[in-house]
Amino acid sequence: MTVERKTAFITGAGKGIGYGIAKTLAEEGYDLILHSRTSVQGTEKLANLARTKGLKAHLVQGDLSNVQEVEQIFRRISDLTQGLNLVVSNSGLTICKPFFQITPQDLDQVTGLDWRGSFFVTQYAAKLMVEQKTEGHILLITSNQAHMVYPDGSMYGSVKAALSHFTKCAAVELAKHRIRVNAISPGYTDTGDPRMGEKESTYSAIPIQRWCTPKEIGKAVVFLDSVWSKSITGTELMIDGGGSLTCKDDREHTG
Image (tube, rainbow, N blue to C red; front, side, top):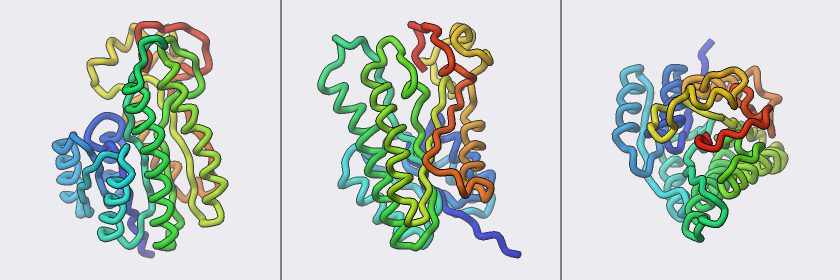
């Protein structure tokens, strides 16, 4: 029996969590469409890896906070594949600041990419899946801060909370089109980004006392997109070592 190869589109795939998800999908045999706005070197590396495995890999660029550019990206995707199966909306901007220091520019940046960008990536992905008659799957990468009250998190956490609710609303509306919508909410993730600081200094706020890895998140994406998850929609999977279960105050590190 021939197993149909799937095509996945991953935003923010050039580094961090998005890179880890895309790399894992390549290892699982997905054809890839890789988005980045600035981290082109990372997406080129991923594309080369995928091609050595006999997979298709394409690169797209654009500012996802600009709806016209989102539309252009999906026109390009429509030309590249006749069946878009999976979209991972991963791109996001983390700005955590004291409430009185947040500027209109800060709010515009975070809501523009994390909320507005994710919303319209989901909308245009769903439109294309309907046009292509694909039983598709859309996954939003959010944050455990959607369910926690961190110091300096009034803006970032609130935007992530909006995405969590949006996941459920979109899942209900798109179910009639056989499109599933889910979310993954990581906590501290070992991406190698120096801004995250020392892992051990955060362990008092994480019951399991470890950070998750981008590959673990990638494996969760694979599971949620598998035949074993066909009845899972509108669900948010927390991957944070139990951090969102506690009320520990970790003022120096907001993951």
